Length: 347
Ligand code: IPM
Ligand code: MN
Image 1 (cartoon, rainbow, N blue to C red):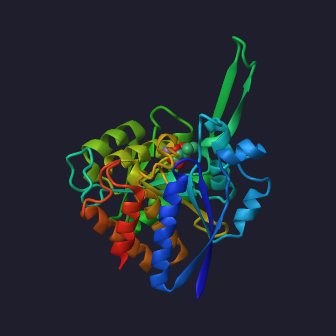
Image 2: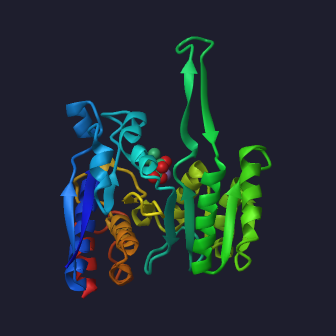
């Protein structure tokens, strides 16, 4: 039997609740589809940091490299460990080390979910650059604590990095409606963002079947609210994509529905799948976290592993569940009830 080895990193807060839920659904679907998922759990988290002084061991990346994929819950417990330490110790290094340059975030209203907009249909696929740009990590501080203090944080845009994410966007647009929206702020940022727009134009010649439009980030934010039906695939830099995908999550009914895949499209290193919501320490272990974002992320993992049919079955089961009003309203249904609803709908 085909067996996939999966690294499980529940992480912090509700990461535990939702990873368990997603794993239960994944196991249920694997049973029916004739493949196996072998999970190996790692306790890397803020609690681990408190014990060891590290978010993951020194050889953490090498340990993860052997797996077919990584399923992650959430990272961060700011009351215990500053986010600037925890996220730079666990989540962000994995995205970079494994060159997971394409962060795919589907924003879609599930049946029965009432979003804040009047729009009945909302279906956008955001593609976020995930390894460079505003998250390059290049910078520093000098004269700390004095009146002369300086902080510099440099965005880095490379031709290779911009080209590969745009290509990924064009390819995704091809599999959908053939419309791609590229997001920059080239009216204000005259180097990096003009560069991005130029590469967009260059590549568009190679994709005559894709209609590409360029928008500024501020106008895109307004468009997502005012005319979401005019959008299909949206491609943006790391920070712009981060911001737009919280907006997308809000429009799809909340962060409890927003799934994501950090993909290395070459397959040279494992990809990582995680819900967009954070660790929500205030509701950790109460059993009320919505697991749908994590379950959806799990479905994206199966799709990436080549189990498209199993992934589609999870999506259909999620839709059947929300259509019955289960998991549609924040805090109404328990994590377990939603998970069991999805598992029951699989068969
Ligand atoms: C996300 C998160 C992370 C990001 C944080 C936690 C560093 O907001 O995945 O959207 O900005 O990438
Ligand atoms: Mn975010």
